[in-house]
Length: 96
Image 1 (tube, one colour):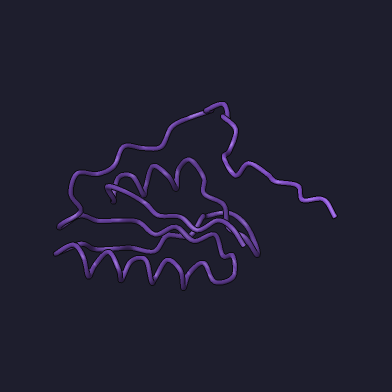
Image 2: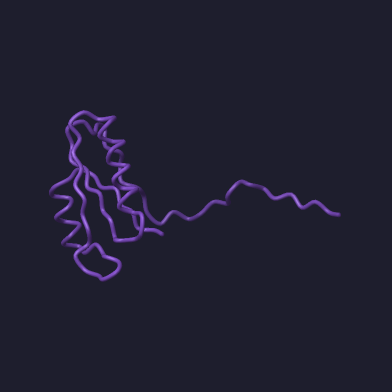
């Protein structure tokens, strides 16, 4: 029997973009919760919103759904503009 050992360190991946900078403070801010209708995403977002509200005084959340689609809803450029005009940040659930 032979033992094959793998290196668990990831190889360098080319960066194609960067994350948005972290907000310095969430107290009293509005955070958007984007759901694309994938099963369970709404529950995950609700829980994330509750955790944030318990941690940051005055934080408000609002659930958003993309304006086009059927069983899945997609975020359009107009949706993104509307959300960015109403919120300082957004959490999205887009996977199964």
